[in-house]
Image (cartoon, rainbow, N blue to C red; front, side, top):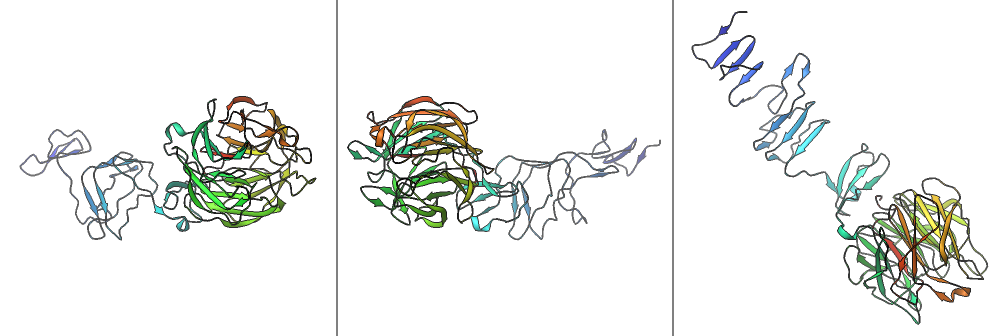
Length: 459
């Protein structure tokens, strides 16, 4: 094939079907030595791929210098099937947009911002996998195809897997002490700080960073609520007020909402708080019948409650559920194997554990552990046994383990306990010793939660 040379210089060369501009040693179909500039080119004007007869080339396009994109300067940036890598600074003027379609790979070497908005500005029907930053809760969240869920990926350091419990009765008085443990290990509880009041029978909820204790007993009903920041130690701070001065309530939570239900005097009230914001509780709905001393647990979307009793001689075996993200009354879930009051409940994202409790009028306690599959309705199934009979106690969980901090036992609760034991949630079997609580002579009516429980990840 003949070689064609245009002009009298060597700036443009066509040799063996290879074109060289500013290059005499052409090694590619188009070999350009220097910068390519395109001005007022229809259909382009930005960063585009070069077209071959097969279609768009699947190679990396790199934007390395600073670029200003506005309606009067550049046209749209074309999408391509390879990688877009931005290493320079890109500024998008107000009113302009950049659309690249679905990009296989996007590498950003400095900063990258996802859409930002409050809870009310969420898209109700986005594509599954859509990610945004929720300004109300200060967290990333994503849409799983059905619900918005929080991305639980913040750094918690040594506090990850921390269980925290507070208040209770230890002869001769109610106290304000907050204790903590590291659930993945074993060992004795350590001092964390103090509640704002000496109190017992106060339900606890958590969003993973903050723990909140609801209305409590201080010699009479008290509607005070307190909170602490779980990764750090220190005294509790006032959160707001409950809708009433109930005590012996149950509780569970998601990443955003804390739910409290029932109470003494026997009540059917369900109320909720937004854990990330300080304020008073609001009405949520009603449980199926009035009761006190019921236990609760949750997945990211569903809350489960069991047990309790409205008066001497009338225990409950019914298990009920609610959808945490929407307000409304509870519905029947199944039946418990125990029918006890003053149980403890905890969970990971799929399996819920209820344990202990007692029946009236004997008030002797039991050591039974049972479990439910939270996503499906049905009756509880036997799991194993605690190391001893116990009731009016608390439970704290991670994705793999539940720790039970024992309360009281013996006829009419005459013996206070200071022991703790644990189970592995995924396998059935009996509990194993974990360590001891702070009070050597025991305590009951304390309440606990953790930074890693099964309700995290949901609205």
